[in-house]
Image 1: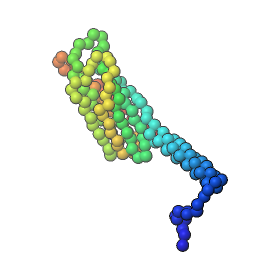
Image 2: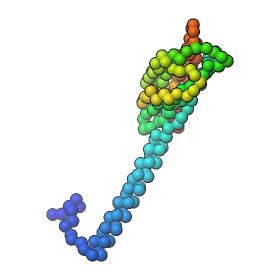
Image 3: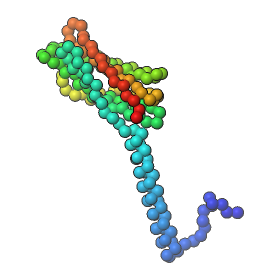
Image 4: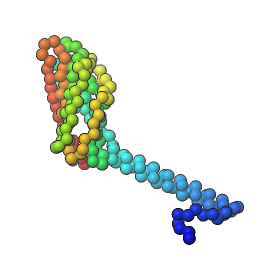
Length: 166
């Protein structure tokens, strides 16, 4: 008894074989194009990265943190990219600043504190160190705190922004 899963034992030759090979090649190509196009479109929709920069001014300092974020299936994804800390108006200071992150949505939360060694030279520095995927509840708030380095008390400033799934 034959089923659809059985392999044909029919022997083809000449024009029949050529026709079968053409049909097989056409179907394979259509399948690959359709499948890869669907996967690419779906990936682009689900994981379209958006780049944003949050900026903090405090006294004679300016801190900027650039990061990527994206929503997919049921998650909010966050990944830092680069930072820049600039001393303004001749402000003195070392290169031991900090960048602290706090991501929050009910009930998820996540914290990341940078090492005590962030440069304050006004140049962009790669900072791919902080990555997280949190359960998506439709929104998330990203808080950034810069602790600037100078002699005496180190000034700090914070900002935040809320992101909503669209």
